[in-house]
Structures are given as C-alpha cells and as structure tokens.
Length: 219
Picture: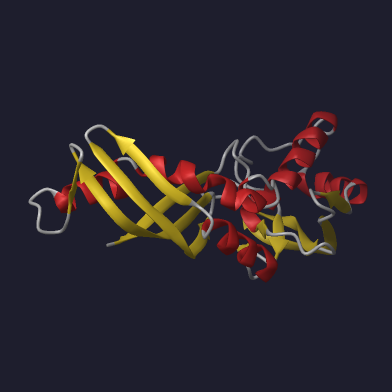
C-alpha cells in the first residue's frame, strides 16, 4: 500500500540514519529536512532528508557521487514501501556540504608524483609525439561531470619520420590532433595516475558520471 511522502521519509530515516559508502565514509542523517523540488517540471516541492558527511579516513569524494549511495537505499526502500506520488521523479534527498568536490592534499601530491613519472612516446601514423608530464593539473566537478586539465611538455614532434617544429605549416594542426581530436590517447597515458580518484566510488561512479581530460600542450 502506497504512503504519502512525509510518512515515507519518517520510515526511511528511521531505518537509514547511517548510510555506509566506500573507504569508511558514512552519510549520517542530520535529523532535519529541507525543501526540494522533487518533480523535474519543478511543480512539486517536498521536505526531504538531509545527510552530513562523516569522513574519518579523509577519503576524496564528490557530492554527486555520494548521492548515489542514498539513491540505492531509496530504491530498495521504495520496493518495500511505495510512495503515493507518481510526480516524484527528481532527487529526494540532500547532503549538507559546501564542497561539491573534495580531494585531500596527500592525494593531490600522489597524483603529481605519478604524473611526473609518465614519459610519452606514441605514434599514430604519420605522426609521433614525444614528451612528459610536469605534474601540474587542475580538477573540477560539475554535477555528474569530472573535468581534468593536465600540462604536457612536448619534447619532439615527428611527421613522416622527420622532426618538425613551429615553423612547419601543419605543426599547430598536429598539436590540436592530440589536444582535441585524439585526447583519449594521452588520457590513456595518465589514467592510472588518477587511480585514487577514478577507481573510488566516493569520488567517481563510472556507471553514470563522465570524466573528461583536456591537455595543455606546452611546446
């Protein structure tokens, strides 16, 4: 038998005062509710539970990825106690945090150290790219998107077996070939350097989030 949303959340928070995430991180109900639009057409506003982040192991996280842990519990609970309200199609919870993205300094240092060890020598006929990463990068989160910008120091660029420089007519086009058209080639080179983030479900959920890598190619 379906219940109204107020009764549903009273039962849900009673059973889910603490939600376990990965690496010891927990979401704990604050005891409060906040008004949210729970319909995608923004016509229905309801009081939904608010959770705060308990992060004893200083794990990196994105707020967006953590929300999925609440969503999983809600989906299970809705099978037990259906909600009376087919209009409820949007998010029915919130996390008390001013940070959409959090990365501890130790993780940032680890990424820098790993990037500095990556040497690149890749060939995609008819061009060959040689260089390295200096460890400089920026990372940001926007809802379900993770965006990384990484500095790449170009040492040599070869075309048809001959090294070319900025005086060559096609030099900039071949730089853009790796920077834009085939940036996944460079992303493959650095993916493991970000393993503390891209393999951590508190930070990045590959099932529904997107990860974009851009490269600042320094010549």
